[in-house]
Image (cartoon, rainbow over all chains, first blue to last red; front, top):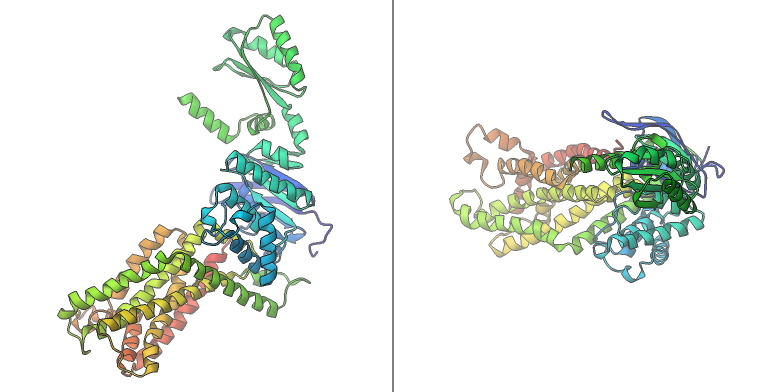
Length: 329
Length: 270
């Protein structure tokens, strides 16, 4: 099989990876169709980067197999490198080279001619809105510009599949938006993108399919809408003024969403609500009728933690660590 | 190398094409590294300031107390300090590679369809060119303070050339170390603890006969002494004898170990 055009962009079967005693991947199965932006959602340390590093030939799996555009990532690594582009978690930009030079060097390493490398570099600089800084050294760039240059470099070889490992981690909101816009343009152009992220919002905005990764396993897969339905859409949190009515409030809220959470330390009851904001008035009326008085009410979009809670029944490691930190204080 | 494990297929490029790509990759890598040299001139200053200081201190402070067979101490010590400085260049090789690992650039390179050895060879060639620059500079300053070549033009060229050649496999071994420890700080520690004993227990700064008898065989067997002796003989216009052949054998042996080690350390996919 020679990278058949019909082959899915990525096929992963029973992939495991252990580092000493640490099991980073514990049997991942995944299939990504061509032409989609696929989001790999999970907390820090879930195994996302390890998976990306294996798929981009930077690391070898302990067991299992993986192909990208039909090419085996282990046996045919050298050939696969001609078909993929990678922007790793760490921005890989040559600080002493200008934006243009950075891209030209990558073009030459893709064995494009000098002229072709220059042409390609110029068009990518334009596409990523870096014209003003094209001839400036990269060490003068802002975080967002460096990230855009990094993503641009991953596109020099015109890859069939693009891997972006946490492309917006550590960026300020404005830079994040500019990277999002760039990825959205790629998606419209039909490039297959595998994107890892810790933010549900990001996966929701960019990815048409999402796999949720936890402790080295894919624990759920689907479209953003499907996943949100499993979480129950948005989350309603009510805070009671009377500690004794928490259980009553839980019973009331269970009519509007599944599995309400009671937090007695903050006197809060939260419930995922698929019905949307329109049902809030109803909930308030129901609580009022039951004589339960509220001191606060919030309604928020589900976060990665909500997804995790709904899918695993436990908070993500990060959230758990933060929670312990808080309770210790 | 990974390319040797590649299954043959319709789109695998021919050996000729791969060779051409490898050469082109190496050239681009040399150019990239030279650009960094030019744009970070402090790197060149760093590698040249201490040897020039060494040269002046040894000549004017210690030189008077050291009896040598040469007409004056500068003639004796310049080849020694020069070969030592060129060896120190390998340090720069390891540092540069460790920097590229830390900055994440090597992950990009390793995901590209480029030659694995080009990254190492490109680095070695760029550092070799910088070593040539350093050699010219040091000989120039040496001449200002009384150093003179005693042989033919060819011997005068051959004297620093021996040092430059000898530094090459050493740089490759340094490169392997830099790529294995992957940290700029660790490279510094390892480099200093290795280079100082190796270069001082040698014929570089004092005649070996002036050392205690138990140390003399160590200094004589030191390959660095061989390189210094060969370089010094050529500078004086004397017959280097067996030291020249000895140096060449060491260069071949160390290269055969160092270069593959460095390429392997770079390509390793843990």
